[in-house]
Length: 152
Image (cartoon, rainbow, N blue to C red):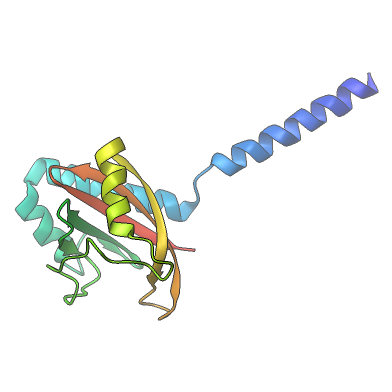
């Protein structure tokens, strides 16, 4: 009886660890929810209205450090909620993180293949001024991707 109890306790511990590892963090959930909200807005209102709404730094697609960005499959940043006008409209296809990762190309590959997904890369955190790991959730729309990320 004692062996069965110890065995079952071990199974419960294993399952709780396994389930905890698959549970998304609150930050990941928030990024995902903002992307889903932007995709729904796009489906209801079209691309031009979505670009305008995303570029509004005080609008519905900016929430503290979370903001939506949109890249075309040609690698042009057509919308971003962080107000960084320098990157808006620029070609970001060949942008590399500090480790040399072509992260926008990887984003495009992910959404073209699966329709959605996550990409992690090094990126400058505007709040801290430091390069940190950023995790972005992405979804495919017609010829482009909508994303939102968070920092560790």
